[in-house]
Image (cartoon, rainbow, N blue to C red; front, top):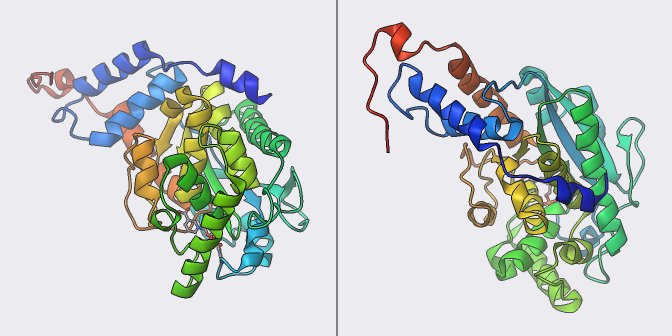
Length: 350
Ligand SMILES: O=C(O)c1ccc[n+]([C@@H]2O[C@H](COP(=O)([O-])O)[C@@H](O)[C@H]2O)c1
Ligand SMILES: Cc1cc2nc[nH]c2cc1C
C-alpha cells in the first residue's frame, strides 16, 4: 500500500462501539471508572476495532532495525556493530524484549530496514546499508524516506492478513536517539540541548558533542518543520521512518498500534503530522526516561500507561503494556454486572 492510500483510508474511530463499551464498563459491579486508563484503553480499542467485543488474542511486535551514519561523529557509547548482533538475538530469545515476547505470547518480527550489514535471519527489507551522516549531508533522499514509510505500512498489512489484532512498535539502531532528538527538535521547535539525552549510556562529554552535532546538522540542512518527510529525510533514520509507516498503516487498517519509548514517540508524532487522524489509533505504553519523552507525549496529547524510567527501546515498554491490557480485557469480559451481583447501581458520572 502506498503512503497516499494509507493516509486516505484513515477514518475516525467508531463512536457507537465506544459508547457501547462505556455502557458495558458502567454496568460492571465496581465503582464507576475505578479502573481508570484500563477502561479508557478498552473503549479506545472498541472504537478502533469497530465493536465492543474487543479481542487481543494475537499480538505482534514489529522491530525496525537500522544503522545511522551520524554514529561516525562519536555520538554513542556503543559501536554500530551492536545493531546487527541484537537484531539477530531477537530471534533466539537472547534480547530483553524477546524474553518479554515469549512470556506474553507476542509474535516478534524484526525487520532489517537499513542495517549496515546483512544478517542471516532478520527479514530483509533494506532501503540502504545505513543512512548517510547527517553532519555532512542529508541522511537519505526523500524517496528513501517514503520507501521506508511504505515498508512499515506493508509490514502491518502483512500482520493484519495473518490475523494479528494489535501491533507494538520497537526499534534497534545504535545512534537512533541522535536522529530522534534531531527530529524532535525540528518538530517541536525546541533547542537541541532540551530534547537530547544520553541514549544508551553516553558520557557527559559525549552528550555535549551529540548536542553540537544535532545543532550543526539542523542549521546546515534546514529541515522544513511543516514537512515531516523532509525532516525524516534530512535528519531522521530508516527505523524511525519504518515506524512512522507502522503508525499510519495501523490506522489505515483499523489496527491499534502501541507506541514504545522516545524513538517510537518521535515516529508517532511524524505520523500524526502526516495524517492527524492516526493519533486515535495509538496507545502510549510508557514514558521513557529520555528527556524529550514527556514533551512528545504532550505534543501527541497522550498520557502513558506506565512510568518505569525505562529507556531500553526494542519495544520493551510497548510489550510490557500487553499484560495490563489483557487484565483489563479479562475484567471487561468476565466480571459480573451490578444486576448479577445484586448491588444497587451507582449514579452515572456526568
Ligand atoms: O526507547 C527509548 O526511549 C530509548 C532510549 C534510549 C536508548 N534506546 C535504545 O538504545 C539505542 C540508541 O541509543 P544511542 O545512544 O545509540 O543513540 C537504540 O537501539 C534504542 O533502542 C531507546
Ligand atoms: C546491548 C544493547 C542492547 C540494546 N537494545 C536496544 N538498544 C540497545 C543498545 C545496546 C548497546
